[in-house]
Length: 382
Image (spheres, rainbow, N blue to C red):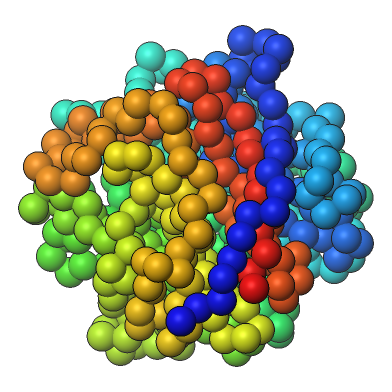
């Protein structure tokens, strides 16, 4: 039996009410605690989801998440002279005050092209980018590309990992580019830097079905105390059966070559994107979005290293009042339609960080369609 958890406070990181037309939708939220005690929450912003003019911003809290102020710095969305959009803002601090900002860049040379091509089933040409700050995230230098030779359709997946030996892991997934006629193959990856983020020469496979029938989407990895080891959660989809599976779980290491240990396992938790936390008392938490009816954001817990996740111990953090685009549709999912509806979903993308051993801060987006704000919740963990 897990500890009893409860939500103690809620609020907004970024309220879109009264904002301009280009600031009506925020999503892809992140959360990061700096060494000086500040907190940053990043988000993608635009007039709609995956707006061709979309960019990233972030807000700062100096009172452990109770109030937030938008950082005025603006990122350049053109890269190497090419028009683009940015998606996701994730941070890591290498030394006090020096931060790395990670994002995904999409080619918007043709602004009429959607993110996903229903014919080829590829996504817009993309690049993994990183920029550096020396002032606690108030400003950043220019973006530079993180190469991923041989992989296309790449997109960042959640926060970077910082291990005790100083090495940095950057999780991402690969798929295929928009105009690639070949069959799609999906894989979850982790690239590693041992020089403070200047280079990421090491690449490790995190999750891949050799038959490319099961997709381990949106990996969320967190480091353990052992350098190179991580705990991961995955939104898992069976392409062949045209249905979502339960959230999958993994404990692995970049040193692993055992395929069985590297294969994520079923948690029995219904849902999609999930953010993990490791507690000092040995519990593993999972902040999970489930777009069934009603749509919910729940915090689940396991007391046996991820083997079981009792539903009776789960805490409901958010119940979504808007009509779901795909309520109860977990079977016979048309793949092209699924991607289209990802743009329409109006809550989700959980992020979670520990304030201390007994308290967590959670971030997610929610609201009416085309009017999505960034929300926060504080949870006592028992």
